[in-house]
Figure 1: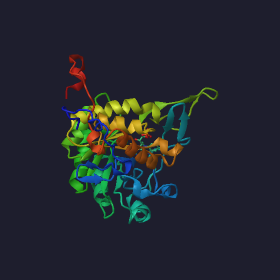
Figure 2: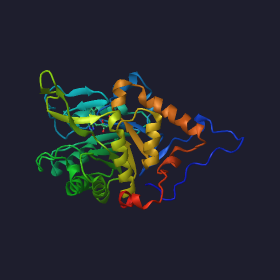
Figure 3: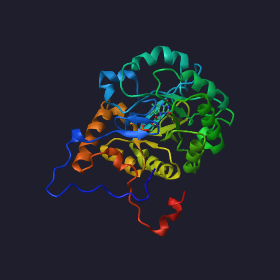
Figure 4: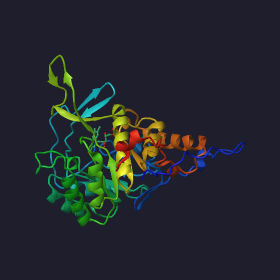
Amino acid sequence: MVRPDARPPAPAPEGGSLPDAAAVDLSVQLGPMRLANPIMPASGTFSENLARVMDLDRLGAFVAKSIYATPRKGNPTPRVAETREGMLNSIGLPSKGVAHFVAEHLPAYAGLKPPLVVSLSADTVAEFGPAAAEISVPGVGAIEVNISCPNLEADGRAFAQFPDATYAAMSAVRAATSLPIWAKLTPNVADIAAIAQAAEAAGADALVVANTILAMAIDVETRRPRLGNVMGGYSGPAVKPIMLRMAFQCARAVRIPVIGCGGIVTVEDVAEYLIAGCSAVQVGTQTFLEPGAMPRLIDELARWCAARGIGRVRDLVGTVRLDPDPSHAEWLAS
Ligand SMILES: Cc1cc2nc3c(=O)[nH]c(=O)nc-3n(C[C@H](O)[C@H](O)[C@H](O)COP(=O)(O)O)c2cc1C
């Protein structure tokens, strides 16, 4: 999705007027889906209860917390730990199952404008297809396939740590539903572009890059790990440059849209992801600190574009300027 011929946006005409923020077209295309703007929540950091602090209709899409087909418990407590620049979590994806989600949560989204994206996890490749079929009900706009969760057929390492398991899980979902499917990748890999290509080959309509980074913290007084599960996922501002690099690599490796995710706090963070090649972004940890972060970013993005004479936010996508320097060659080959 990074256009090789990308040029920086044209400056506003001499003496001419810049577009009004309200006139900026924030809409973006994600495969078959058109979103009103590129800002949506990251899975697990959003619930319909946020309606108390924001107009939910303002979001580009809703992304729900990951669910499994059948009920399951989460990890031992403590499940979250704050660090200087972010947070660690080992929630462990507790889930009340697909049927509970359909009965208890889905109705809350009826009548709202943005599409609902359901995040789906499974323990084995074989469980993904039936779960995807079960969740493909009216009111669901897309399925985000959380292939960053443990694959119990591969020593608990995530599906998205291996191209073949990525391909198998995404193919199973593709065969089971006609809804758009997004693959949520893990950053805990050496070659994320290879995983991105496997998901695309299996029929993914978009990629989400990425889930949390495996990390750890120790309480030096008790000398015990600060998470009940010893290790957990790291998120927040510190991870942004890493996720940005991975989103950039994925955008160069595939033709399907990439959704950037990780560490977004400011409108410049959003602009960076779009310029790197992402068609949209997800906001996670910042919503815990600032429940109104997403509507703020939507307003700021419109003003940021207007101040630079950018009339359509999608014109920013993939406009990163790269020097034709041979030393870049190995990074850019794809
Ligand atoms: C408390 C918490 C719960 C999360 N739960 C999920 C989840 O259910 N499914 C999932 O795919 N990602 C989950 N994530 C990962 C986020 O969706 C996101 O990928 C990650 O936090 C990076 O974005 P951020 O730095 O903006 O938070 C969770 C993250 C946090 C902090």
